[in-house]
Image 1 (tube, rainbow, N blue to C red):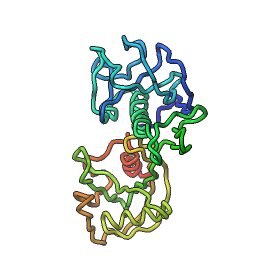
Image 2 (cartoon, rainbow, N blue to C red):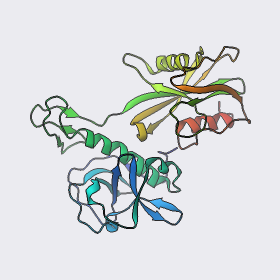
Image 3 (cartoon, one colour):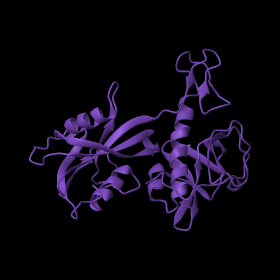
Length: 274
């Protein structure tokens, strides 16, 4: 999965006003694009040494293998060897560490740029020195990075799995049923509700399996398995789901890759792990 970079070591510890070294990674985003450096037939995250201009007001993000990663503003970029690419290209990078750096940096910089001003009184915020958060110097409102819990569930019946195409998918592929946890819900209740809402099925034997941070939507995906009787009629929510159907193990259609927890759970089904 995207976040599984072993033997690489990711460290989320925050440093305030940390000095930038020549080998440190610099992350620059423009809308849903990331500035990348061409490397053969692939791309890599640019480093400080790739920039000919001085870097002002960098935002410390995290480190990977003891190399620090910083976010910078677009106006500081002017280099012919660097180019903007859609953020989703990160899913296909050969270097999984670069993919993780770029996607997680995107989540943090969206949070940073969205919280320059206080949501309570409108004053300009400041970065806290001792932890990753913004604070309003006027009313003291503290804001931490947003993380939205969401469930994703592999629904099976004997040797079949339920797969669906979402209306908002960028590609033409199948994935698992997923949705955000609502106020006042347990995650188990969310699984039952989302399945009923999106495909009209009643499920049983709901079991937690694993999780994945998913920076593209600032989500923490909580992966489950569940069982359903395939004699039930599938009734899709046409606002969310394009189509859904049962597929037999060994005969699955094009589906999400194992970069995501959706593809990882589908692969686990194929391997008869559940």
